[in-house]
Length: 218
Length: 174
Ligand code: SF4
Ligand code: SF4
Ligand code: SF4
Image (cartoon, rainbow over all chains, first blue to last red; front, side, top):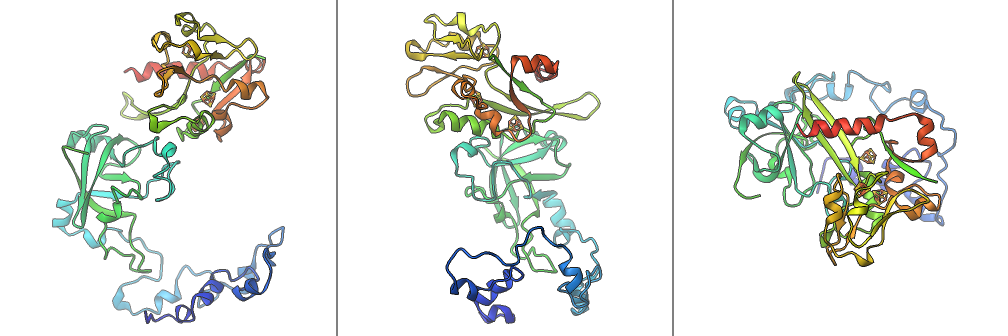
């Protein structure tokens, strides 16, 4: 891939050097020595203030509330150098989409026994919540006639998955809350590939418009 | 030394680490259909004022002082360990009649899928006798579940946990 990025072009080792910069070692150092190697920069007690002394990695060298890097980008992209609020659903707030997908799907839920996609297949942990579960706010559940344990389908313009209902007062009205990482109910399938953070280009995996409906079988 | 379990529901988050401790200690075979001796609950109880009460509970055998499961067993499987005070068992003669489960107000006795014999929380009797905490207590990072000697329990003057639990059970029936 001929990406417009000098660091990526410099290759894997240069990228790793960039990542571990500040520890006092490079990949070349690691290759040249027997392991383990002590990390020279790891001195106790930690001396804070390195960035204040040497400057931050910003155009001004200061901690920037007003980002000079963003200000340098062509205004046609509509980015604000100040950290102003933007609705994460701004790409899907047209009246038709709003009407068809009135719920905010929040996939940022956490469970103590699940670490992303890693521990879903561990039987003891999985036993605590055996089924992929969607948490529905009490008043929404009442309105839609949804009961605990009922099988439902979640759908967005991009896909559909099946989960079981847990009625809760722990979230907010209009929010459907769930966990990512299930093979058989992959929430990422509901998220459009162009739903991206306009600043970093990172996929907006944590939120999407969606809707919910009852189904016969789980 | 007699021991008691103390559960402080104000500190419990229903994280279920205690269940993991118990499953591990007892090598519980979930795939075979066996169940954890300890059970956690995260109940949401709607209140009259429109609010919600979040009731986080962890429960296993209560090791009742006057344990009704003991006389209920026709073949004498259950008994008190005189040292720890825990309700322990020897299921060699168990006929799987489930009388103990019917007598137990807390549903503590379980029946092993492989041979139908009763198994239950024994307070991690061997651990406690050897100066260790029960596995579930060891796993609880919040200090919600503790196991103390009867003397310590009396000295603390606290009936809070017990009362709270009874309140909860009353509330949950609503
Ligand atoms: S480990 Fe402690 S806090 Fe977590 S569920 Fe068990 S008793 Fe509650
Ligand atoms: S099995 Fe039930 S009745 Fe027996 S000691 Fe435990 S809680 Fe009490
Ligand atoms: S005392 Fe031991 S057997 Fe009983 S619930 Fe705790 S870990 Fe399980």
